[in-house]
Length: 297
Image 1 (spheres, one colour):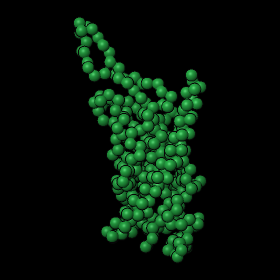
Image 2 (cartoon, one colour):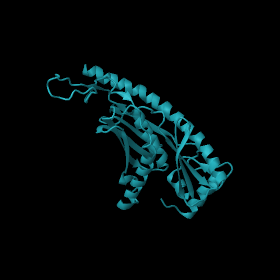
Image 3 (cartoon, helix red, strand yellow):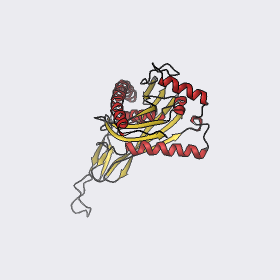
Image 4 (cartoon, helix red, strand yellow):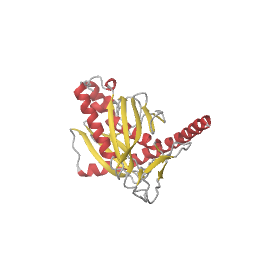
C-alpha cells in the first residue's frame, strides 16, 4: 500500500508523540478487537475463521489423510484471495502466497503431534493445513498464526483400532503378529483432540518506529513504518522458533535483546487470551456434536 508523504509524516509524528496517538485511538500495545469461531467448515477435521475488527479475515481448515510410512507429516498452504490484494498482479500475488506459505510451513512443520500414528511403523495420518486470506487490513502474519492455532486446536483425530486377520496354520498365509490394517471407531465426538495442541506457536509483529514499537498495525501504519520484526514463539515457554525482519531499518544487538524480551511477554499474553477463547469454543463445539449424535440415534 502506498501513502502520501504528508500522511506518512502524520502517522509517524503521532506514534512518537507523548502520549502516542494512533488513527483509531488505540495505545501502542493494543490489538484491535478479534472475532474467532471454530468448526466453521463441516467436512474438515478442524477449522476456524478469524476476523480482526472488520478488516483482516482468515479462514483455516485441516484435513487428515492416511499415508504409508512410520512418521506423520504436516504441510501448510496459504492462498490469498485476489480481492484481498487488488493492487497486485497475478505474479506478485503468487510471490505473496509463496512467502506466507514458507513462513507458516517452516515454523509449524517442526511440530509432530504424538497421536497421528495409526499403525506403528506402517501407517500414520498426514495433516494438511490450508489457509485462505480473504481480506488484509494489516497484521496478516499474526492473524495467520492465530487462525492456524485455532484450526489445529479444533482438529479431531479419528479413533482407530488395529484389525488382525487370522488364518489357519496350514493355509500358506504369513502369520503376522502385528495388526496389518485398521478400522475407524464410531464415537459421538468425532475423535480425540490433536496431541500437544497447547504448544502451537503464535506470531508477534513488532512495528518499530525510531525509539518505540507498537502492535497490530493497520495498512497505513505498516506503509509508514520502516522496520517490522516478526517473532514466532511456541509453548510452553515461550520458546523463540523463528525471527524475520521486514524493511530497511537496522537493529543493534542490545535493541534485539530488549525486543525479544518484550516479544516473549506479548506472546504469552496472546496465547493465554487465545486459549481462553478456544476453550469456550470447545464447549460450544462439543454440545453441537452431542446434538448431531442424538439426531442420528
